[in-house]
Length: 285
Image (tube, rainbow, N blue to C red; front, side, top):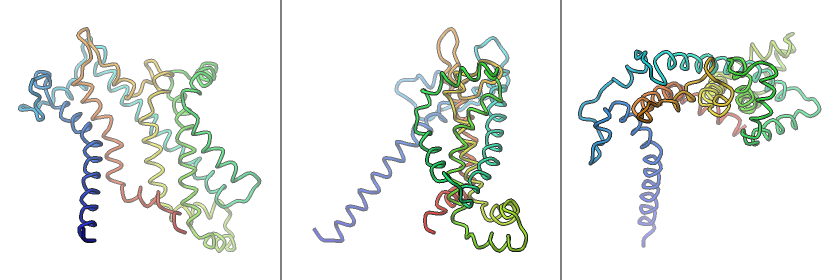
């Protein structure tokens, strides 16, 4: 077999593998979208119809405008949606503010244990979350933070903050320190150099860590499921509660799942360029 034929065969095999991975990844989400626009009759039709003959928005309408006696009505759905937005946005803002300060101190200031600190911070993230459920539950119950926005924000910060510090620290390290040295010669303090020089140059990194912090909080399920009841219940938890006397409401679950996936997907698509730049910064210095 000629060399050119081998290269063609390898390229063809690579394309086939990539295509299979794409189909494996996207197919479930596409089926979720199709189901959200289908009626129950069409969804249960045999043989299966891949595309609904009569697409409907009834499943989405019921989420926002149906106030009956269902287990999950519009009032609960809107409340959970607002809870997710409040908790995720608050977690994102707090994590970015604290993460930027901590990452800058670790990247630029030399103090005893700075390298061990970041290593220990990321090592702790390897601990399975289920191990921390009971200790955190006891602490939150004693602090009266169960089923509150503040309680979930604090818990989500334990997930998002180390990730923010790790990512933004790498970005800060890729910025030449000579720029800050020149600013300090002109009278700037470390904080002045951070806000006037480093942060304006760290736009892509900041955008990427903000999105990751938001997505980490928005998609969090385990702690929200255990530590909330009604007042602070988030959307991922509520989606699992769509049920009636006749069983699960699969169509509403599909519609709610599509709506829950929109914020992360839209943010990732809009800021894709910044995410890639933020993640690759510091890889080659």
